[in-house]
Amino acid sequence: MLRRLLAAGAVALAFAGPAMAFQCPADMAEIDAALASNPQVSDEALQEAHSLRQRGEELHAAGDHQASVDALAEAKALLGIGG
Image (cartoon, rainbow, N blue to C red; front, side, top):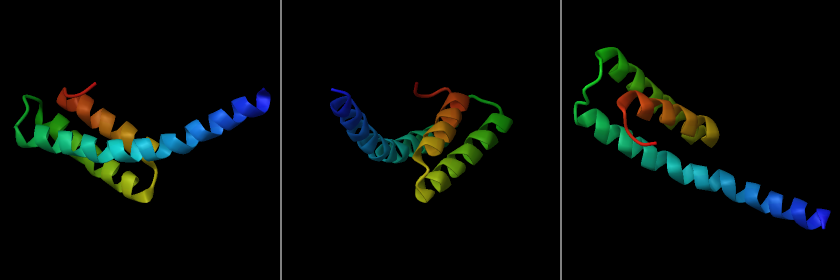
């Protein structure tokens, strides 16, 4: 029973990384669209969102998908998009 539980956990973890990897480009596209639409946020928030978006892309390229998702989520929050 314990072996099955551990095996199921290992399988779930194996699929979690690739799933996050696919989320990053979608988040980047959503941020790009929001930045292009001139959102009603301060210039400081725009600059920070752009910086976080770039950082998210760098982290994604480096394979650190959780950190990428986190940075992109912060950018989306600054822009008032997504959940």
